[in-house]
Image (cartoon, rainbow, N blue to C red; front, side, top):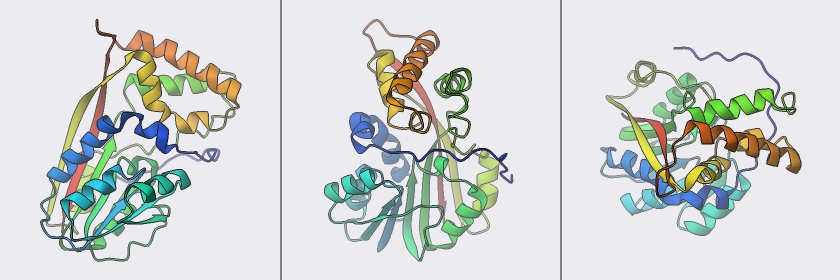
Length: 267
């Protein structure tokens, strides 16, 4: 269950875009709604949103626990600006989850669609769980789609194109552990660990909609090191490959299968 990764060139800094991410706000927010519905903690005084993005998940925390002091962090300046504007009631801080000091106790800790970008889940989850208050919950949702055509094809384009050297360190996603692994890491510190996997079928506006979806998430590390002309060429090649991997419905919609792993650990 120990995660080890081969050494590789450092990835280029990723410039996240709140506007691009929020083009699919309803679809991206549905999994966190489902996640929070499974959190058993009823009363909360201190709540934190780890990797809050543009604040859509933070707003759900405020609605669920209106009396709590809500804190949020994100490593992107653009996301922090968007979150501060959207949820002025929350304290929003620019910080990296990997180095953030989890000064507890926290009644609820949310990590929605973010820990796939953070390495060493074994030590990270142990540290986060240790910061929970008695009865507090750590709620996690992570895309589990590295084996899906959408991700395999972006890796293929990165490896086959003239930009191969530039993108040698671009695949920065953390490979997820099995459900058994997450259970084993969290159970020593938590009384209850609930784990499940759900595949959503997001209705997107054709193949171009699929490309736009990933331009707000998984494609960004691949595009960041490239000049504008190479970005456009990368996206054209990626789109052509996607068109052979996904069916377009008669109404023009592509149903994008998107598996996600959920964990709720309660101390």
